Image (cartoon, rainbow, N blue to C red; front, side, top):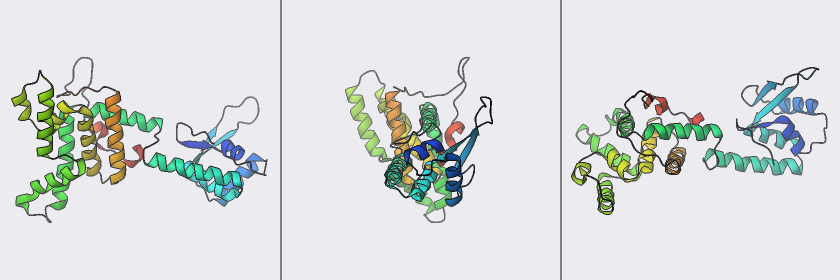
Length: 263
């Protein structure tokens, strides 16, 4: 259909060619489409001044997927209708993180590399807990506020203390070489990291994203993406992220301010 570039945009010439417009004068057609659809520069479309090969430099147009759909709607022919439907489907897949950009994948890897550290997972938990307590202190009985948070978070991540203990017990029964009594006394993040680092990364992602009021569906999609990537990357959990001569400390601050544009 159309080529989507690494910025998740479509070149104007690609749109013009794909929809088979009757107006063969591309510059004139492009100007009319921008005016008719009321598209805004540096929001709906972007311009790139190409290097001159001797004559006047050529301006290349890039459109967001939503802007490209607007153009297809204005063209009103069967080809434009097909491409618009394809763009809508593509947008849905992108928004659901079924299809991701190179930038999104790179950001997910950055998150995974940070959250492989158990101490960063603990800090993510504290960020989420602090927000919940601040928002619910006047609603819940202060005496039970922490237990209310535990129930709330268990519902989000799909794990509670009893379920973690049961799973870690089963894991330790099947794997030798671990100090059972020591691990059983540790916190949830450490247990999950021992049992399944991908699951620990998923839950840490949710802790951060829910503390930022991210859409529930997107938060879950992104956290599952990170879990699957962690498995493919064969990430190994590390308890501490101390600096050494060859590697700087990977602090949670580098990913803590997750924003929707990264997803």
